[in-house]
Length: 446
Image 1 (cartoon, rainbow, N blue to C red):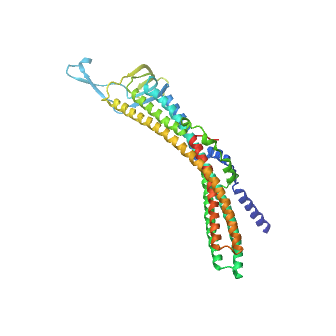
Image 2 (tube, rainbow, N blue to C red):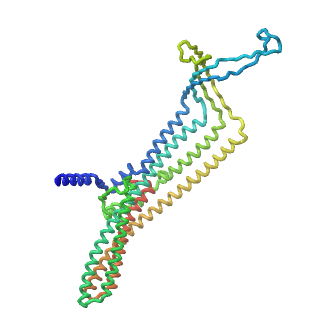
Image 3 (cartoon, rainbow, N blue to C red):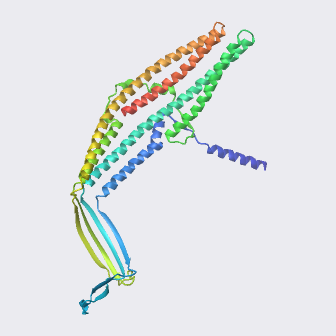
């Protein structure tokens, strides 16, 4: 029995081990590629393109031959009686005979083929379907750019959180060592109690900061998973390092890149809006044109006082019809004119919006270049500041333990170092994020 329990317990442990999700490793480029395929917003944008293709065919199909069939069955529960003059049958004048025309049961089967010959709105509809498909493709490209940017930012936030945790843990180790040594010096009567308390305050603050950053790190991983299209709690491992990634993203070539506003996705989306307004104007104008349709139908009818339509000897009478329908709009009480003028106004608005968009894009690119250049410059500055802060902290630590420096000066140097560390991490993250923002503005992906 004991051996059986051991086997069962071991089996359950094995099952538990297999049930754990395998961590997924990503470099930043692998994360971007994965997100473009699995991010839920990106997938829906791809579905929109497919839906636009189907709508394009749906519009095209309305101008192709259409075939409809119908079967009608009538059962006169009480047939209508008609009165005709009796003298038609040799009866006296002034009297009427009651007559029932037709049969109690009627059935008709008909098939009709219709075909548009000319319809201005159909031509505009075909053009609109093409524009709608292009709008969907542009929206997908815009979504991909935003997803890429979001993944880069989320990836960088995780790396920054990881580095912050590592730095804070090293700071805590150093502070705990300093506090231990200071406590011993104080116990030997060679240091004031204030020095111990100053270090305790500093240590407590760093420990509290570590707890907060650890929680933020978990949230950063969850946000990255959402952007990747993974489950929020999926185990994810990042293979790139923050400093390495920062170095890769320092390239001043983007600052002199050609500003082709017409190729940016935001400009093309605004251009799509202008084209759609032009087509709406064409549509309103086309409503004043005649429409010409043709049709041909054929059918069979059967009649009887009993329901005998399934019998082989039931007689069916055929009929067919060919026709053309021409509809000519003549007068709409100026309704069409008002609709056309409204479409013209909307087109003028769209043209102004396109010009406004062009100007805003130029400003956005200029601003993104400025932000990126500042981020690179600030990174160099913060790196130098960190080196200085580290040297100052080491000097003050040496002076303090040699008895020629105060605990206040040491705490001030430590606080300055911790601030410089966080500023340097933020500067590295800013380089990565500002470059991604500039690439998005330029519609340039390296």
